[in-house]
Length: 257
Image (cartoon, rainbow, N blue to C red; front, side):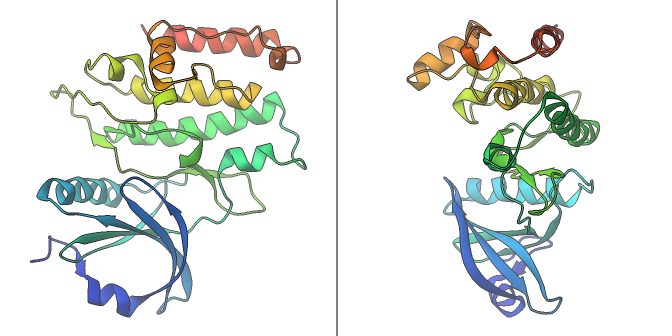
């Protein structure tokens, strides 16, 4: 039996041609596909759904994506399912991850450009948070350039996203270690500032090339996060303005209030 609003796997095979694998994650594989009728490329995330819990999780992702329409957010196309798998089809972005772009030898990243990137990320988050959506997995891999000639970005991968209603208290234990907020590690209620903590980490990395809380193990990373243990003493900060450092510190202090 198909979930409401989803098509079957046979229809997926009729509508799309699978071209190549783009990446593999914990929950499935993303493929580049071609929409035969429209002649455009798309990205199809194939997710194994062995249990009802797995199916519910993917349905939550689809419902969230269907409700979103913003220039800084990945655009959802369609959802499909079979007995053991669900497929989330979105627009195809061929610009690559933001960090891969700025780390290339040809690209000279300035503080002004860092500010511009962070402003765009925050505009996307502002839209999400106004829609009562918390992303919960903001990291460099999930900030993608829309094409190879542009530095316009979109936020992708809503596999961990949640609808956060004012009357709800949600606790989670998920995400990528070095970008987790203290409330996640302490299993305290999350809020929209949980996403903003990750923005702070991304900002630090953009400016310096270093990850502020990353330790030699997940345990050490978690300890650094809980203790708010980061520094501006590394040589990578020698060319960074005091304004950028002070701005980062004030940003972090304001978030935790």
